[in-house]
Image (cartoon, rainbow, N blue to C red; front, side):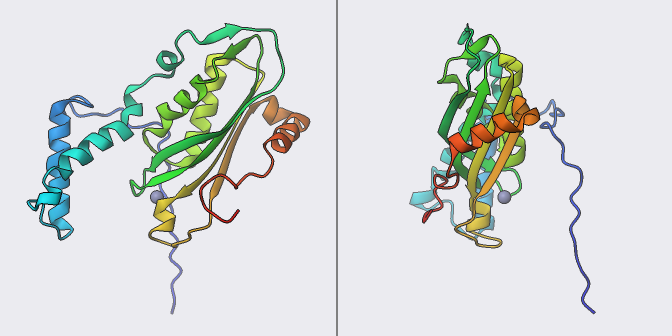
Length: 225
Ligand code: ZN
């Protein structure tokens, strides 16, 4: 008799764990780099490689450095990234920054997911330097993520920094863990959205945004669309 196996995921922790052993070296330190490299050298062996061959000699260290960069968002704060780039302005018209390149790592497989983020807000006395929006995204994208949480965190950060009438964040991305393994679907992409303030409460505003964004899905690098 076939038994249906449905995996029920445990409740997801929303924020990264604050429990960090005192024995661990500081994040980003040379000691942490060294330990990451040791672990990766071992992983190469366990996967069937010879880490002493020429091409792989420095790979564990390069990997460790790359991962420290890709996870550098844990050490960043939105307020520091935004700095003084918030300006008083009376405009209450929608601002959209679209097609922002986005790269992150899925927390389930540590494989990349990448695509585009589109961010909109309606000011309420304050605007933000436009170049800061991609930098805010990177604060959260350079962590181990799920696309859903990344989307919400970016929206929340903008709500807190700008206190606007509303914020909308739409992310479309392809996930290598889906493309290279598992279901091996090369042409599917995932769209997530977070609507705050008027984008949440006012269907007309939301509709205007979606029509301005139009044609989602062309940009995630999934080809053929
Ligand atoms: Zn994954």
